[in-house]
Image (cartoon, rainbow, N blue to C red):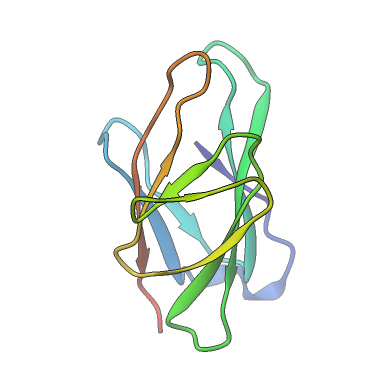
Length: 114
């Protein structure tokens, strides 16, 4: 899993992270106000697939997740369809619904800087 590029000067401060359920994958640190989260299409490939965009909300204690994938994403067990948005809070569980290859990894959203 890889995070999108950071384009603002506020990139130094980590305000949230995504913690994978499988510890062999690293945490995704979120530094910018808006970030697109990508994953490898195949483990042997350099091709990346955008699956969600996270935007920090003005209240600083939540974020908005937008599904960028053609598949649904489960957020706290509720399906979020392509291009739909949902507000997430610290401890929200994000689960991409498996694609044809069956890849599925649960992520826990954690706000670490208020």
